[in-house]
Length: 220
Image (cartoon, rainbow, N blue to C red; front, side, top):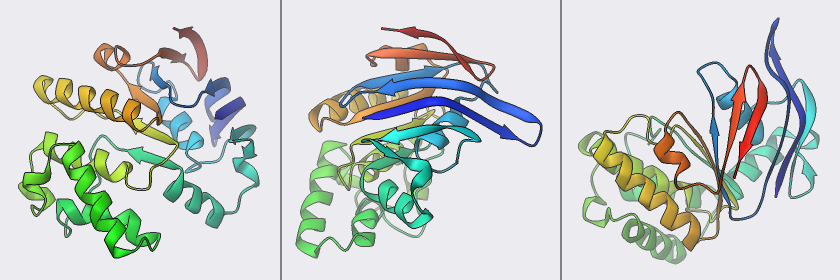
């Protein structure tokens, strides 16, 4: 589904990625681990088309991301590649329900389908009882559940998650990981999870280890 070939990324004189190769298959969960500053988040941003590599190519479904316009990249991120952030990034003036529905509004999904899909996702992440609450009225675990539901709204092929449990306590971490594992399997969605946590690797099919901008180990 996604292939990164000899990816390099530099910021001025700082070479963050130094020639990364990796492949992500349909429906698989992959953890990316490494020390702080190793290039994990930079790689994730390049995979999602948020950032462009200095050198090398990233292909998603055989399309070279570097050949796409900014408008085409935005469309790709809205429809096929979704992101879950460590700090949730929910819109504070929208309720949980409205945050989940928002990506569908951007794509002009009709009202009936939006309502049906939003209700399904609220139920799937077990947050339907908090549907009308605003983000500042939700716990960290509840906000992450809403963020996960929002990432599924357009039924993407790939979800990129940057430290999805990094801002949660141990109890919420286990609950969110169970949820991610269940939903990615149920919806047949590939996931790439950047993490420092061994617990995250336990729900993944394999782990890619990065150090100093290079893949040093690929564990099944």
